Length: 239
Image (cartoon, rainbow, N blue to C red; front, side, top):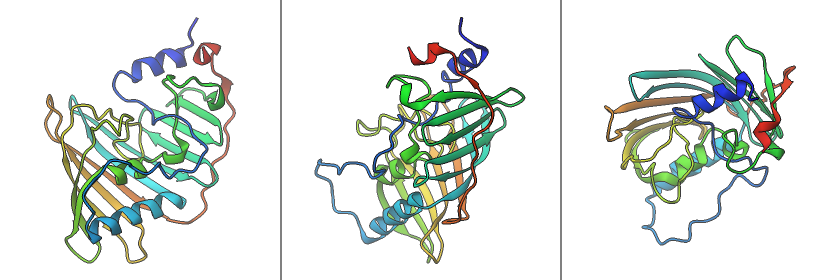
């Protein structure tokens, strides 16, 4: 029999889903072999800042519209080098330490899942190499230009054959990006070259425009993520 945890996850994934599959390899994606226009210097600078920010420990906060008049807020932290991640929203908390994944509904106990045992099509696959989606976002940018000393406007393509995995809103349980056209964004990079804010606008075919904002802070400072006491997930998760 499937546990309450399993049932809750399966229901939740009809609307929001976790990030893509677990990988402990180099977080930099394989080069895109398709021909594309040369990026402007502004675009290249922003992409470099996103990649630099992804490689350093950082905290994040999310404020995002979702379809059907839903709203999502949350906070968390991520360190790709030490394979540490945590996030907390109104309904869900998640912790990842190496290959150990922990999840709980607010008010319930923690459940542990061994990421090494999950099959590729599991609903709980988790991309620790790009847990906050900054690399996918960098690769989805189609143009960007500076609007001030530390600000950028641009456009990105959230739905292409190269980006089949969910990654929006940044840093939180992700929204499937199917059916979205090229969309605008703004980004802020501080004087030290860290990305500190990203605001996205998405217009699904069956929903009003959705605004999603991620703020990033405490770049390069160590984060402390500990494994909680947890019960083991049902074996059904690994079948």
